[in-house]
Length: 74
Image 1 (cartoon, rainbow, N blue to C red):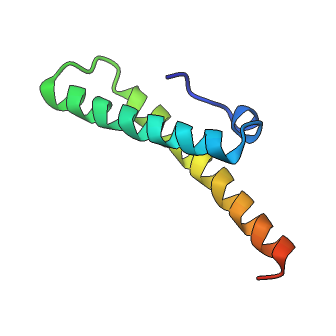
Image 2: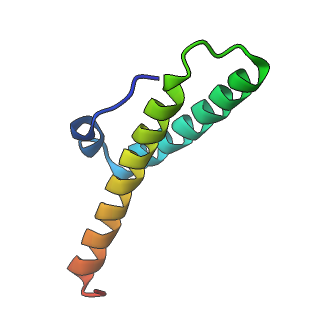
């Protein structure tokens, strides 16, 4: 999977972000499995994928907080 930039992630809708989240979690599993079996050549993929996941979760949380503020919950 290509590592997505913040601009690309912000352009996605909530449902698309959740789909990407599932894809990235699966990719992390495959990376861990490949690392454990010695098949992983580029270990920097861990770091890149983790950062993409963190970006995605940050954007989801920002949207969640913005919705709460708009409703007057915060």
